[in-house]
Image 1: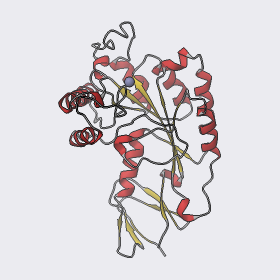
Image 2: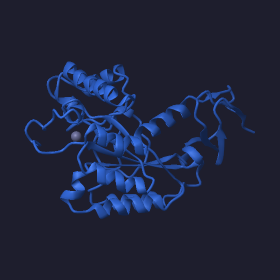
Image 3: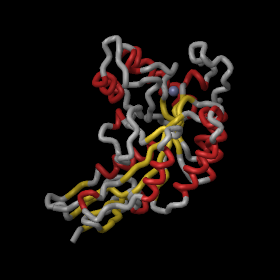
Image 4: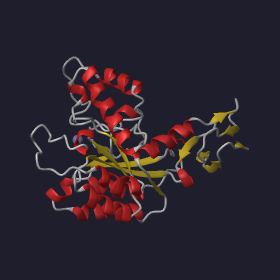
Length: 293
Ligand SMILES: [Zn+2]
């Protein structure tokens, strides 16, 4: 039996991604910093905020949410991406399915129309799927997100330094919020992490950091972001990608076609794919078949 593991582009065993919510004006400074380090992020956008119709139900009457032009300039044109965060930033767990469906579908329709792109990623607003009422359940939310062709949704929860790819893409738990006490410690651990010799344990690793960019202003700690970026970009074995780039790559890896004895592998996708088999790294180009000895 082979021990076979996904490797990220370039044969790398580690990936890093960031996810920042709501479209705060501080996203511009955040983008300036991470882009200069070659790091990528997914920005979760409230569609009503882009169209100037969102004030957080009175909580944020004076916030200058990112405009359409700013999203283009600071996010899309720099190779970052946008994802859904609801039309009105309402929690999926706290409303009946029809409300949640409207919230996500209307956000998707608006952002796709505004930017002329396909938007299938998402981060749950507020408590997301950590709290439920009005008869809603996680199974119900996951069911309608699949029907709406949503690829993944980032949730919240316990911080963890397992650095694993998600088992459930509709409950993608980040490694840590950037503001947590142990955030820098986690980054250090991830950067220094070397794969064990035991073949079965050589799984790919992912560090996933999330937050809100206004928090760097509130805590006066933009240097924390610089520190994280410096530690990640100083390594050459980490693939920096958006959330959807990671999802798409994993889906492509999962689409590889194997002979019955698993010694011949065909790549039917448009991406080049890397994998490690019994400690050796292989590349399979798009439409190529390789033979494992
Ligand atoms: Zn939010």
